[in-house]
Every structure is written in C-alpha cells, then in structure tokens.
Amino acid sequence: MDAPANNKDAASETKAITSSHIVTAESVQAEEVPTIPLDSLQTVSELQPEISVHPVASTRSVTQPVPLVMPASEHERSLAEWLAVWWDGIRPGYLPLSLLPVVLGSIVAWTQSISVKTPRGDFHPIRFILTLAAVLLLQIGAHLVNDYYDYLRGIDTSNSLGPGGLIQVGLIKPVRVLYAGVAALGLGALLGIFVALSGGWLLFVFGLLGLLAAYFYSGSSRGLSLLILGELVSFCIFGPMLTLGAYMVQTGHLDRIAFVCGISLGLFAAAFIHLNNMRDVESDAQAGKHTLASSLDLRINRALYVILVLGAYAPIIALGLPRHAPHLVLLVLWTLPVLVVAVTTVLRTANPASLHLAMYQTLKIEIFFTLLLIVAFVVMAIIPLLPPLPSVTLPF
Image: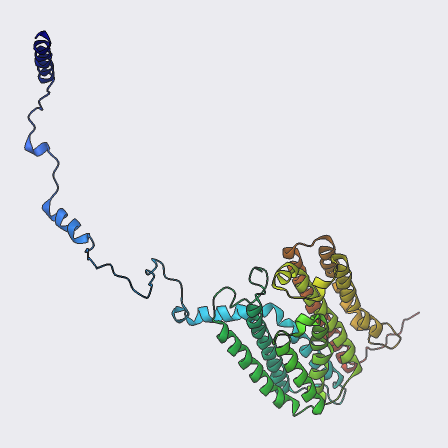
C-alpha cells in the first residue's frame, strides 16, 4: 500500500516543478510584430505556376520535355552565320593548292608574249577568271564530297585538327553537304567546258581528269585516297596538269618552262598532303582508312617529306643554273630558311598539333616560292624593254 502512495507523491512533485518553470511572454505591442502586406501575398500567389492534374495512362509514343536552352537550328541562323559555317566547310586554307598553279601558268604565258612590238603582252583576263573559278569550284566540290564520304566511313569524327567537318560536328545535314558538293562540281565542269573551247581538245582531257579526280578522290567505296594514291593524285592535279592547263588557256599550246614549274608545285602539294596524312594517322587507323603515311614507318614518312620538299627546288635549280638560262628563277632559294624550320619541325616531333603547323608552313613556303617565281618571270620580261644605259667613258 505504500508504493502507490509514493508514486502519487512523486507525480505531484514533478507537476509542481514543471509548472514552476513555465515562462510567460511579455506583452508586445502590435506595431512590433512583423507583418506582410496583403498585396504582396496576392502577388506571390499570382507568380505561382498553375497546377494541372493529368491522368496517368500508357501511351505508344514517348516525348521529351523542351530543353531550357534551345540549340541553334538551321532555320534560326542568320545569313552571316550561314556564310561563316560554309566558309569553314570548304576548307579555305587548302584552296591555294589549286590557285597557285593557275596563277603561275597564266603569268608564264603572259610574260612570254611580252616583246618590243607587244610591250603589254597577250593576256585574256576573262579566260583567266573563268579558269580560276572553275578550278576553285572543283576543289570546293571535292572537299564537300570528301566530308560526306568521310562521315559515312566514320573518318575524322574525333580529329579536332582536321578542316571541314560540317557533318561531323552536326552543323549541316549530310545530304545537304553532298548536294552542295555535287552542285559545285557541276558548276565547275560547266565553266571548264567554256574555258576548254578556247584551248583545244587537250584541255577537255585535263578538265575531265580533274572532275573525275575531284569526285573519286574520296567518293565511292574505293576512293583514290583509300588506294594509297592521295599524294600521286595531288602531285599530278595541283602540279603539271593545272599549270599546263592554265598556260594552254592563254596560248593554246604546251610549254617546257610551265611544265618544269608545275613539277615543283606538284611536289609541294604532295608534301602537304603527305603531312596531312601523317597528322591523321591515328584517326585514320581507327576508321580503317589506309594511306601512304599509315603504311610506312615514321622515319620513312619523315624522309619522304624531306625528299618531296627538297625535290621541289631541283627542277627550278636545273632550269636556272645553265648558261644563258633564266637565272632569276633562282630567287626561290630565298625560301630555304623557312624550309629549314618546317623540316626540323617534322624531324623532331610526331605530335599531330606540331605536324598541323608544319603543314601550313609547307603551304606558306609554296606560296612564297610561287610569288618569287612570278617576280622573276615578270622582271625577265620587262628588262629587254628598258632603254639601254648610256655608256660612260672614263677620263683616264
């Protein structure tokens, strides 16, 4: 009987202790209590999104929510953006390969027609412009067709240094790139027909070979670039064929000097393409593309590049050294210091980024090489037109 009594006494004590610790709040004035205006609550309520309840049911189609940031689609690009995209896609850095032999062949033809009787020479500017436009269109078409077939084969998908890549980076639909390439080839062929009418049947042959090489360089399942013929095709097209073709457009016949100059430019072009393939060895191997660079050892590839670029000087040296030869063509030797930089870069590294820089160094050498040849031919044509210097007799 004592236990219940003790429990009752403990409970009463706990209640007393608890009640004694109750804290009462002091009186607070109404002005001191923070309040929210009713208008603000209504504004917050209006900003809340509406809630809609939809029944959950199985559907046959699956839709994705609209992303917060929409990607730029084709129809949203401005004209300037479109031009920039396509300009990058046509690989403008590669266009000098076809431009240089056309300009050089035309200049050689013009300077040979300069004489005392015809001091202005015989030059056809409309033919020159049409030839240049036709050749550039063929090269642009070849680049676009190359992009399309590289996309089909999975080539250059991981190559950030390679040019073009309109399809690989998702800028243009593949079929549009192919249509643009075929259209450029067709327009270039049409202009080439008008040009060939003034140069004879051999120009038609050159034009047909150029058109076939432009498409089948990468086109079809067995493109020329896949048959280890890239360097050889580049040498023929961007060298003797274009140089002689441009010369024939102006004169209607062939010439030995134009052919010799074309060999030099062709060797530079082959060296450029070979460096391009050396740079892309890894990405080409992943895609199963076989080039001359991927078939040879690194040391042999380096030696081949040195042979090509040094061999480009050999025809001009052979042309300018003999007695009574056009010695001014030896001005091209001024480019040798820049050539040393490019060669040492290739010999010291196998890094794709360094080979990429060496590629454009090689192209710059070819540009300076061609400009010095043009200066030499122009000066040699003008010198006979200058009046003779007065003879001076010494008094002693």
